[in-house]
Image 1 (tube, helix red, strand yellow):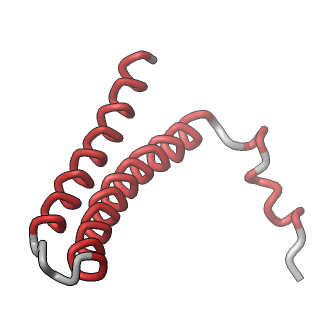
Image 2 (cartoon, helix red, strand yellow):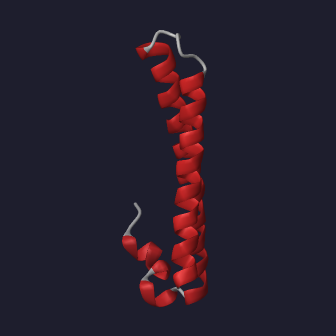
Image 3 (cartoon, one colour):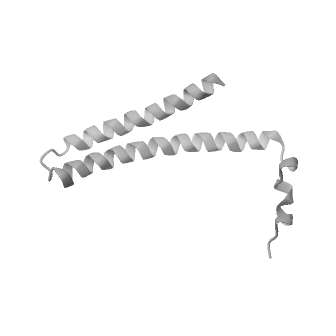
Length: 89
């Protein structure tokens, strides 16, 4: 049976600042990457859905390209805001 006492090493007073900073940076950069990928995929999916489901393929592939471009722009906007946040620190 696992108890919390086995994990007592990871309590606040036993962890130095350096590993905390590494984990924080990994979380920030991982989040930035996931935000970018999700924005691109969401833009592509919405454009594809509009092309094929709403307009029955009559506008294909233009709305897919438009959705992809908007997704890429949203992803870069997210990265830009993250860079501004770090620049202000």
